[in-house]
Image 1 (cartoon, rainbow, N blue to C red):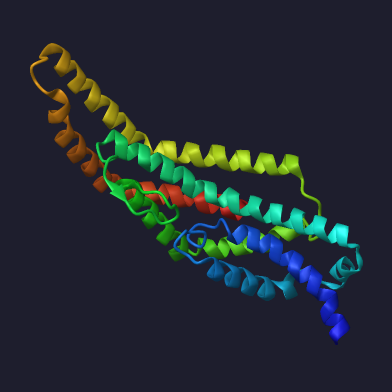
Image 2 (image 1 turned 135 degrees about the vertical axis):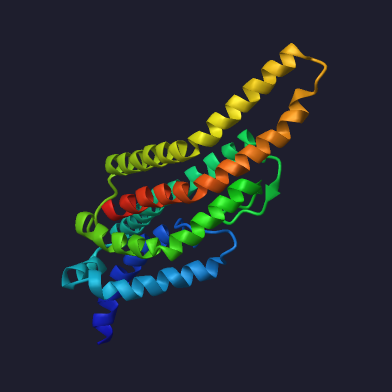
Length: 251
């Protein structure tokens, strides 16, 4: 019994390396407000729960390999897990980046707020939208889709496989291009509105230099931006999470 348990100990730890690497970057769980011990216990519990589904008799051979190969597997599995978590994380990072730009374009970029996933302060608009997005990530069960994707990933990249640098770069590049194109599309109305209003008040300032056009434009800029946000926020988040879910499901 003890020998059988020892045969699965190293494969389970290697399994934990991939799952733990992914959980370190998953939105919400990877927040700076979540203690490291909590992330560790969640990763450990998830590894033990998934071990019977993933490990089989062939994985017991990992325990018979040399120490150098085990260390190589630990590094490789951790890198694969970090890659999987990062490919999901970039969607929230892209949203943080673009909502910060939105806040600057509609005059709300100077209002600081406490972020959910970062240590440094964000603009209030960015904090509001990213907090809402993090909450919806769990309410829509996308964290369960991430776990499901972790299990399915073992069919394409089995336990004990070497890290494929080319495939990893292609996956990260695809996630970056898809996420930033998505957030650029949903933030387009705010960027266009900010450019138009600033251009109009810039022309007013050129024609009548005596009028402080900049200070006059701020109330109109903020009021119009908040009005656009009121009407478009629901549609923005619907489009965002539809693409986000498709990306996670497709793997």
